[in-house]
Image 1 (cartoon, rainbow, N blue to C red):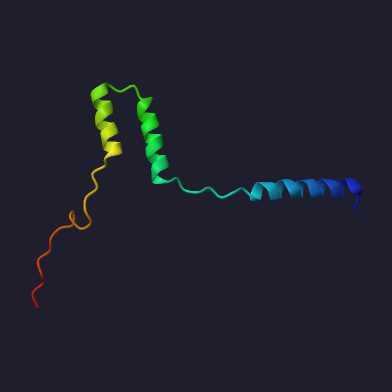
Image 2: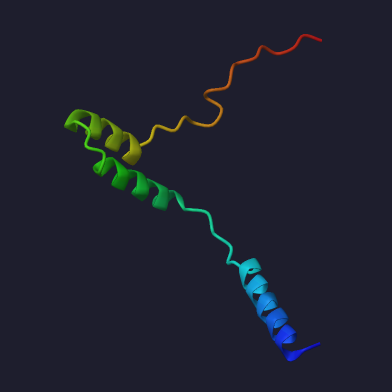
Length: 78
């Protein structure tokens, strides 16, 4: 092989190797998601009452207790 072809092949191999080795992205934490939502809310331009309702819902979410939202089933008869 000619030195120019070898150099070109090496450059292409390095470029492709660099593209293939991107760092893994980690998932966002709950705190980061909440912070982003609050920042977007502050930029939304909503009326104050609507802004406060959404802000309170973001800051103090109502999470149902486990099992409370499941339907009650009667015991089976044998």
